[in-house]
Image 1 (cartoon, rainbow, N blue to C red):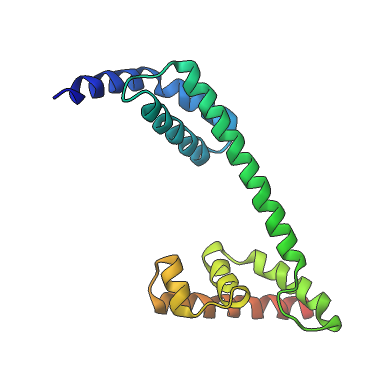
Image 2 (cartoon, one colour; image 1 turned 90 degrees about the vertical axis):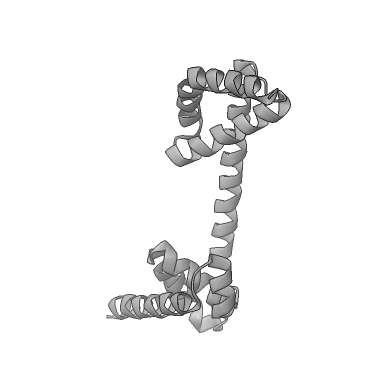
Length: 163
């Protein structure tokens, strides 16, 4: 019963302030989904720090800002990793294949995300279709068919490039 007054107070505080916090999170992240994630993380942190009591608004704004900075840094690291990974040859095909590898990497980038991730897991990470299915939480046949569709699209892309 003691938690109900805390929950009511928290809910009232959140209802009164959520829009301001979300507006600030949108400004900090520039992406709607990221803004919601950052805001949720900030509110969970505020809840934990305040033992269920509404925190100082300035603390929530500061936490949103910190989380947005962390997210941006993480995104920058991911972009750098992906850029450096693209420099690594997809297939070890010798000196003559360097140009082909570059074309292949470009073609893989054009695949829809759900197909691209299967190709990357299959070719680059050398996972089995069962491992891919487990990783992506999709049926085994879906993993195999996505790979097949991706290979067909890559084959078509290379026909166009080579023509």
